Image (tube, helix red, strand yellow):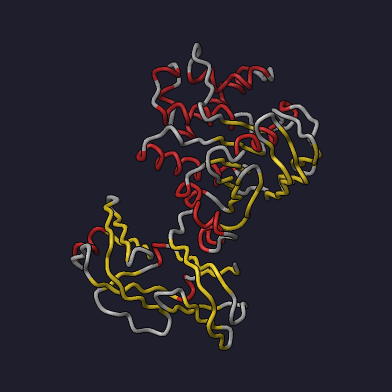
Length: 351
């Protein structure tokens, strides 16, 4: 275990963090995912020691650091705005912490050069921060944190200011750094796709509390409640009741159709049904297989999202398909289609 948080609480005038219990493994890439204003950055700053909690404990690498200063925690922190010193060069920014530690000059030069090579910014060494792109500033800030060889790296919305292409490259860089260095990373973001790509595990944060912790699949396919499902883009949140149960296979009446899935819930239960739009397949003919649910309907809305097309059926069921597939099927508003999805794509919770 690299991080252990027990019953953590902290109140500010306008906000409070409460009942945080969290364990993060050594070498794990852990993402704290939540909407703006949910307390993600404040939790990160509590871990770093920038604030002291009102109650609870923070353990890092087996040591209780609840009241320890930030400098003594061995933590690297990369701010959302990167916080680079504007009056010194890239190399000097990266070397700053090493100079504070008064390491020998040759060691400082060797370590900063190694870190610039790792992040591919050696050619920027004599540039100043205000001449860098967003991605270059991000890499410089990350190098400055990593050169101190922290056991724990905290990233506050590290890609929020990057364009899509730069973000993709930075994601690859971070995954490479994580793999090669073995550093434990805690990464804060509001971006669901970013969390899905980067995380070993995710903690969803809502209103100052950790609402759910799990693997990427658990968070996105098995949300703990309706609020989390809505936030992580489940889109299809339906209501119904169980009409039949046979050998663990239940049938659910959702009003316009009946669907099947496996569940421990009993006949008569009122339920919420969650189905991710990417798990719904659109066809012009019904898909007759035992593993699939089939719903017939009319396309009520089509939204072009670039490579992906969002299809709304009967005003209640949403599916994603590729632009090419939509063109091949000649999908248009008003056309009859069949929507199919596996029983394993259906997540059911008792209301």
